[in-house]
Length: 81
Image 1 (cartoon, helix red, strand yellow):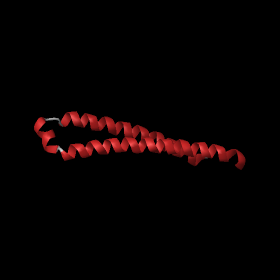
Image 2 (cartoon, helix red, strand yellow):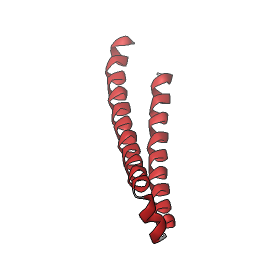
Image 3 (cartoon, helix red, strand yellow):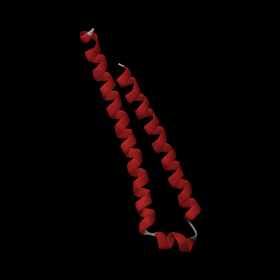
Image 4 (cartoon, one colour):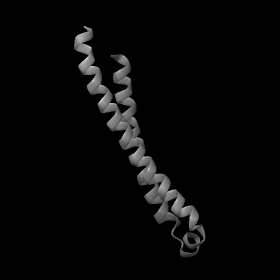
């Protein structure tokens, strides 16, 4: 049983690592946009771009949550093994 599980466990670990990289990339994109907005808040307010940036942030947040869901699903599968 152990001989069979070692390669399977290795593949699952690689899968989880790739999912985690995707989560971190999505999170970095969202945080970068938030930092950009906070750094130029005066311009955003003066130009009334709040709604435009809000839509962009929500889109990035939804992408991050989707990747996080996939990562948590992969982690759950790993724990069940």
